[in-house]
Image 1: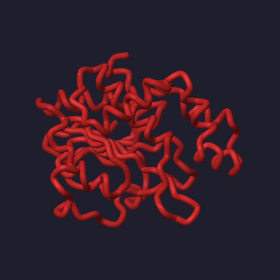
Image 2: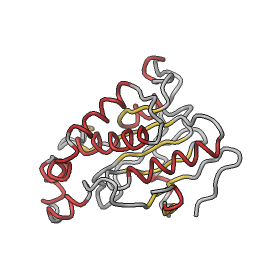
Image 3: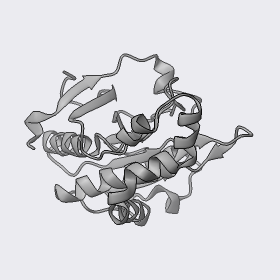
Length: 216
């Protein structure tokens, strides 16, 4: 599909859906920033602080968001902030390519997996977010945006290696089982694993950089 087929929406959400408690970036070790790479990947607020300070596009990765919208992330700088899962990974990659063309230079991209909460309230690794981040990295690479950090490359390898089983993995995952126990049907959860099935792109915050494309 061409980029002209992308249906872009700007989410009408409270500010807290993008901005939560601020995370300080000044104390982040240089090695954690993945700064030499165009496509970066990390998890949670600390990961966001590490890789997104100079990003042009920040992608909030949440493959199975809960009804309440999930954890918020405080997005630094003037970057555009998008959401992504498995269904819209290809559309998000096309949007990013269009943004790179608009910028007239290499766009720096920070993919941040939201993750989930463990039973005690602490952060929990969510395999579905790893796979969704990998789907975005794979889709970006197909468009020629492939200078990825080892972390992003590993997420991509997880997705491409398990591509045929993604829908099953979502229903069998901890998060998938939680959603089913809460009333979602297995078919609804599996549908979230159909990579590339949506052309919609959700923009949580438009780019505040000069000449930004207006949200449609």
